[in-house]
Image (cartoon, rainbow, N blue to C red; front, side, top):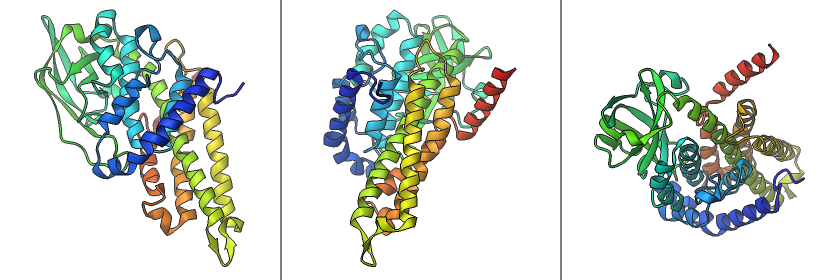
Length: 378
């Protein structure tokens, strides 16, 4: 079996996304990085391709595919524009996939069509100004009053915050984490200004602000107190797709440095004849292939009915630094050209750093793995 394209459907998906990336994503990447905006019109084209609901059953308007398909999409698009891909991840994984698996039929009828088409951009609110990895310490609260909940608090570093219409938001209800759908037109809800950032600039982020925010009780996802279960289940597909983004970055940087080293000469010799350059290329390629193999192997065992925290933590822990290191190696091979914008390496290096932080820091993965592996031996 082809690990990276296990079925003909996966292979055709990769070909479609690769062609779309070359034809539509690559040409706009530099501009939207410079202006720091999500290309919303291009984002909506993903809806037309069925990619905004890649993991949603076809009976409900999605593509009906699996975590491996999601990994393929994130890897291929990240070869050209990780920032745009991050906006896609926040919508398709953090919002759509999460929402689908914790919503009821009535909620799906209200939300699925516009988010699958891209008419509405979605996001997810978990991180808070004083609380990141320690999600149990979140301070946003929700109190039930008759037919609605009143939310108070703030979320920060929320991808798609400036453009988003709807957000899956976690809050404490009587000390228990609970999930809600919050729309931009809910009274008392607002978003802060766009937060400037080092990389991933083709996606945007902001605070979500809840000041006596009125949310209909019909927007409660699942039961009060069930939010932690939803969150943990969805973190697994988030982490494996973030790992795939790092693989895409590393693969593109390998391609750039290999081509450059074969074309660039020094002292009358192509620089790929020098041992220092060979080390950068050889080690970068080996690390990229190892990260890719681990990511796709784990993806086979990720899904709504499969819990795989050990695998997804391991994949992201290993893959996230690979994207950054390979991009750095590529910059060293290219020298001054790599530090400038022409070869795209400086943007890919800036983008890669986030993957060691977002979706769980590498330190949180080390903690989770130690705890889970020790428990397995007990």
